[in-house]
Image 1 (cartoon, rainbow, N blue to C red):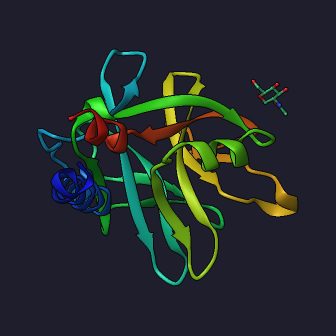
Image 2 (cartoon, rainbow, N blue to C red):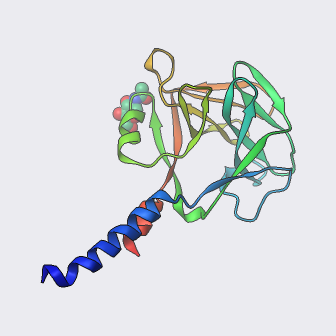
Image 3 (cartoon, protein in one colour):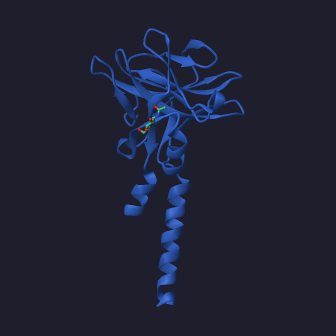
Length: 185
Ligand SMILES: *[C@@H]1O[C@H](CO)[C@@H](O)[C@H](O)[C@H]1NC(C)=O
């Protein structure tokens, strides 16, 4: 019995390991146009989709940003707020593999253990950022969630559409569930 099924079990294991190693999503260079497979991050109050971006800030790191349809530049919150129009990437992949879960500074460490949170960037040689969003004045706003913030607080930082800083302890974080889909297939 064992001898018969062992090669099949091995093959399945190898397939699962390969699939786990190979994430289905990726960050594509953003030039102002929204790729067809861009992951939708929500909507603004005008019912327009918003997207999840990543900007490289020299000597500082990679920060999660919000991309608004039709806009080439994004606001980045990294040691102050700046308007950036280069070195931007946009999150792409199968939309059905992503969902948002409510989290906050006291719950995030549990979510990190139980779910595959999308890593959206990092401070140079330091902490990772997850992708977060909150309800802001004009729809959803996308921003960064510190894996472990200052004084061990996992907080959300973002920028609203007028360029003002957003900071809060409660937010939603982006989860990727590719692994579950692999097990089902
Ligand atoms: C975080 O969320 C949990 C679960 O929803 C809740 O019980 C807790 O009070 C929240 N903590 C803060 C600081 O908001």
